[in-house]
Image: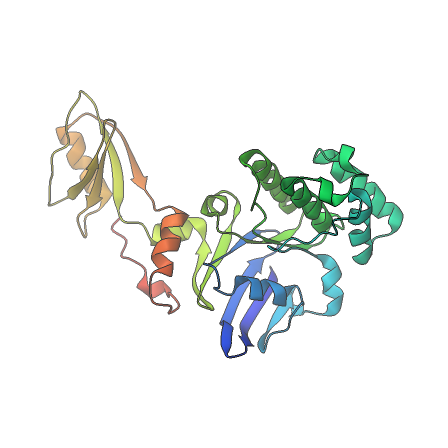
Length: 312
């Protein structure tokens, strides 16, 4: 079941089309990545889903029905441009924002105390927001986003400004929230995070969706038929243009590219007949490489029929 369905959404600002017939589907209980370069239209789409702005055309469905204002209370939105009242005390600020989402004061206070202790901020509860470091302020805003236990969480660059330790802590919290039943829409430029936690994603470039799917299937679609080969006995792999070309050599392995139309099992049989093969691995492109390659292409939506041929 899809928790969010975006159907043919168009958004125009003073002659600039921010979203051009954008559609996507976010499965319930998943972490779904929304990717794209700066200015691609990601934030415009997130603001529409959060009902901050309305589309000029198209619709957003929540659990199969048109979205209503009542759905806003079930959304937690962490925008890229953080916003906290600097003079408010941390605990009071979190409770205030939770009350705006419909929580009772008692429930909000209990949840605030739990989260501050959980994320190591309990000693800062009565301090003003402006006294906290940037990273600690971002933790406070994260708590405010998730405190009311929303069914839908929208995170726009949630790891921005975090050191690796705190970024990993936040990543584990996002996974835990997913496991507890939340659906998470996750916008980021950190492709490593996409590979680690996103089940699926859509890539927007110049207002259009140009690529979508699961991380694994898209990597298969964009693979370059490269393999890392390890040989024993100090042997050196020799070229064989009928089967492969040698792309790179280092102390531990040789990278080969299969010749067009060749299947790896044929290469494997040939190598086993000539060498003592100690290891091999298919080298799939990273999400970073796929992002760069896709964004560099003309901005026409990429159809399944245009995927590279599968040699394997």
